[in-house]
Length: 121
Length: 315
Image 1 (cartoon, each protein chain N blue to C red):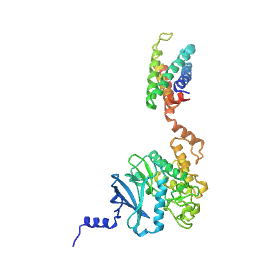
Image 2: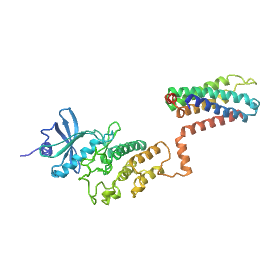
Image 3: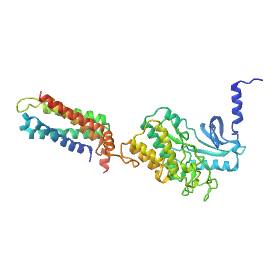
């Protein structure tokens, strides 16, 4: 499996679980489906970006930092959109989202076929 | 007449210096003395470079010793490997003594390498390179028989060279290119002769059972070198098991060759299970956690982040 595809799948899966944690917050529980879908897409985009980066740069620390930064940026974009109650959840979305980006950044550096191997296969 | 210490020293050097007239070498200074020969740093006048010249000691200058020296040179010359010192030339002096020229290694012995305080990983990586050189010799039917820290040189760039193949044994399946006098090597050591260095030679070598000496005897010596490199600090269980298997009293219970020993050490370095050690569930878990500590740290960071978010919401 190539690195961007690995990032896409892993980011999506982690995004689903991250979105599902909203269930533990009663006030947003009615909107959980929308949250899970949004979180999944956010994870997939971060994963593809981290996978693309891993093909270009072979460094675990750099991958983690890149994943963190992309996760933070995407989470900020989501948090910047007001909720149905008009509130912004910057801290609640950006903190876990950035760490998940770092996890995907690490995984795409450690696993998945590099570009040359993927082409040869 | 009084002579200064410097003059006495110079006269002593001249007295022991080999007469290299008629060769392309000029002696520079003595480097080391071994059981069979003296190693000199010499200058190759043709190629304008320094080489190490091993010259048979005058008191050992017999036809048998000369044949042994030529045999050693042939064996080493046939083993072309980055971990084995290359032989450039072989010849004889005007007094009939045999010599051979080899690459001059400007490094330290393994003893000095250990004293320089390498990390365990650095020491293990150097050990793997020793194993690779010995495994190459085994693949060509040659057993070193005197592996010890003094016979391993570490170069300035971390390269490792196995030296002093003077008592090497040719196995029956050695290729014809290495066998100096096929089909029977008349200079092979007879049963009952003890060859090796105490503390590094295998039990079968100590008993003088020459016919039983094979690759596994070198594996024992490699185990002793590994123990030397690891020092006094207690080794982790997998590494202790590797040592135990390499240095087992029974040859059949040891690793079959240097390459399988190296494989286990590499697996240990990579955080993988080793063949010599049956690990408990707890050890397996600890090894997995060590190997994936970055992932575990990130998961812990995520859980911590989630926990902080919950605290933030409930404030």
